[in-house]
Image (cartoon, rainbow, N blue to C red; front, top):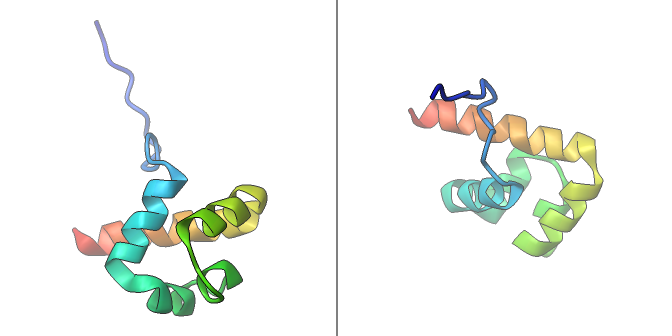
Length: 75
């Protein structure tokens, strides 16, 4: 059997996992500075961030792009 691998670096990575990793690495305060999105700056939580990011494609794109940048810097 041949295995089809996705070229998408976000394949299999949930939005929740992305937020947890970014918060673990930067903390809420620094994440709010790096990504100027209110859900990271005003009373942040994983649940409220997920709710906002799932409804807001431009914000989700910013977070995903920043996550990809972060993991490339970590390597």
